[in-house]
Image (cartoon, rainbow, N blue to C red; front, side):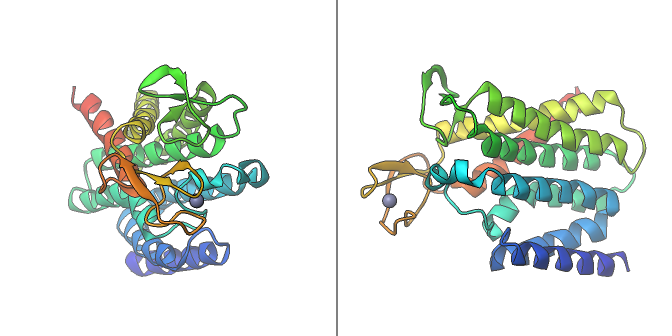
Length: 266
Ligand SMILES: [Zn+2]
């Protein structure tokens, strides 16, 4: 029965997101599947964390649109998220709901779930708000070196603070809504720090091994492949070809979880 309710709510939210152009067709389908699993096998607390991520990140990618317009093409996709982006951001969280279904007594699945969403929320808030910073960011692998705004791997205090807030919001909800009522301030700090660590790992991958391309028409580096916004075929210049932005997001979530669970065990 709960699965049926989960399915209905997930379908309604995905359709609304599709109509609002926050998701494209494949993204809406993926979100409906993911939402059904998370609402249906987790429950309302799990759903609220997912929805908080989803709504805040969609709202932030829309906000300040004019100021971001010039930078848009640096990002690999428009703001209508596709299935790859939905799974990249929510895939790890979904795995933890499945773990919860197998081991309902343990609160580790809730901590892992929250840490994964804290990481992708931190990453999204950092990216979407970080570009509003008037000064250009520095590359995470060499903080003395400034790079163009929107460059993968670029970090700033401003963006990192935005990431911190994005992570802390999920951590706060995770403590308040904990299904086992067993989370405390220590968990809040743990999840916030793990989320922030995940988003820094995301920047690190962006600066090192993430696949990067070059648009000869724009004479510019881009994450877009095979075609740039202008329709020109992009050329691979560095990074692992298989490691696209969606997989980097997945790794960001996974890293957040690893940090959280490692600290819990130690
Ligand atoms: Zn171009």
